[in-house]
Image: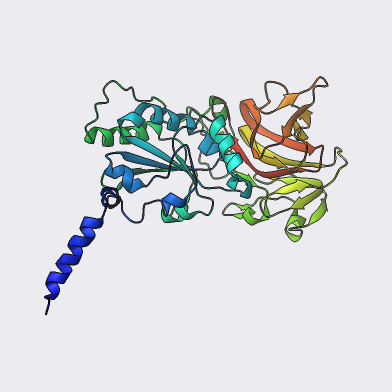
Length: 391
């Protein structure tokens, strides 16, 4: 009778002998932080990669969750590209995980267009079904996870900022691997600077600073939160997003809205004929007029909108933009705004993406209005910023 202990040892030896070197290296990464079924995921800029395989080859890995219409993600692109350029030949591998917020962000063509526009050269994997997102138990765009050579996540960062801190963490792990980085200069920007005009005197309800005690201090300021147009996202910890009370009785329907409200902050308002969808609202009339619009009050220096168009024409959909009921000046116009010979300010919505609408000289409180000129216009979300430059 064959000894059972001998059989166990023999089987273990056979399994070990049949395991390839790459498979052994996969064991470097912990099971909860890997790209599931990585060989069958869709990749851009790279063949399929596994975190464990990269670590087993002596690399360190930075995983970055993003989606291409997210302004917070867009603001981090220059830093990710800089780290890729400086450290990719020293052992850093950045893997961008594109997890979509909206349905149109699942389309490869749209993602590749953003990758090309923003010159993202590092490996990117598409996570349309949130498989990687769920594996990491992630909840944020953007989110960064830095792995050491043993597969441990030694550093995490959620949201914008922390750029010097993140780069220092990268450098520390590379130096542990034996890399000499003395001749590589570290970045100097840890957070984008808030424009000084932001601190001009808006006093929040919850602030302990007011006109009576603000001497010598920067007053507390408020900035409008992100606004979502679709009904699936239209309840949040901060309350409702829509000012029109009848919106919530008209989901998945076309409805004629009347804007007779005193505008409250962190709400958008509809006038005219609109369709309320799960992710977006779309204008559903073909008769442009001053009574067909989307408006809201905001506090910020810049305004960005996620828009799309179902127009068959490549010319897209023209949407007039007004600030405090006046057309924009060149000094107020965002990157995607045009001004014609009649001094009308407008955007042309074609590709589904984020559009830069306003970049104001100073932070302030205003009302912005969008007046579609064709019925194919759809709005998904608005985001706001108060940085010294850009959106």
